[in-house]
Image (cartoon, rainbow, N blue to C red; front, side, top):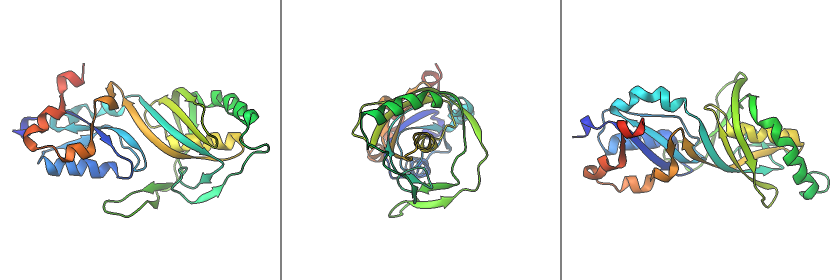
Length: 235
C-alpha cells in the first residue's frame, strides 16, 4: 500500500539528533521505497524537517529552494570554532559597562547590516551528533568559500542579556550560526548560537508537523494520514 504513497511528511525534529537519523528511521519503520528531504537541519536545531515520500522527490528543487524562517537564541560574549555553543571556545568578552541599556542600543544599531544581501563564510568546523553517540562531536568540513544569501527579516527581542532571542526569515543556504558569529564580531563581544528552531520552509509550517517521538509511535496503517498529498503540498 505504501509503495503508492506520494507526498510530504512534515516532521518536528527535536534537538540533539541528526536529521539523517530521522530520514533513515522513517524509511525503515514504514518500509518506504524512497525518502528524501527538502533541506538539512543541524543536530542542535529543532523544528521543521520536510521529508519527501516517493514521487514527492521529483519536487525536491521546489522545497530546497524555498525561503526559511527561524526562531532562536544567541549567546553574546562567547565565540566558538563551530559558531554554536557546542564548539570549542575561541574568544568573547563582556563589553565595557556590561550588558546594560547602552549595549542593547548598539545591538539595534548593528542589525541593519545583517539584513538584505549578505556574504557569509561558513566555519570549517561543525558540531555533529552521530547516531547512538553520547554527545556532540566537532567535525572538520574543510574550508568554505564565501557565498551570498538574503535576509528578509532579522529582529531581536528583549531578553536577559547575554542571551539574545531573535527571529529570522531568509533564503535557503543561510547559516544561522555564522550569522550569530558575525553579529558578535560586529558588536566586539563575540557571539554563538545557543538554540535554533526552524518554523517554516516555503509554504510548510511547523505547526502542521508531527513530533518525531509521536511519529515513532504511529502504526503503519495510520501513517498515510500523516502525509500531505502532492496536490495539497504544491498548491
